[in-house]
Image (tube, rainbow, N blue to C red; front, side, top):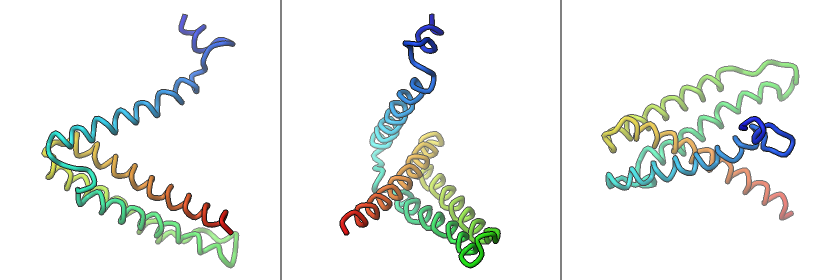
Length: 141
């Protein structure tokens, strides 16, 4: 029966099921994490680790992307690896700091990890907003 429903000609494919379930599950995870923080009188945007993650992780990604400058004069040159390593180390240190800071604020290991992962999602949101802002700026000209 499941094979007919999900794999048949008129049914849903596995990719369609995953495409529906993943955003719903991520939304539920975000709501549960924020509600758990609020029950402990901890607020996501007032955590110091949120702002540290947004600034340090975005800076780490910018530093890692500087390795592309090694191909500026010669497109066949290999990437300069030091900025990649430096960016990875900064990102890892900022993520570990966020986990320990969040554990100190929430006194729960699972909630600290969940909050730290949510902060990484906020970093992706900041990058997305920056890229959208740049795209809109180009379209205005």
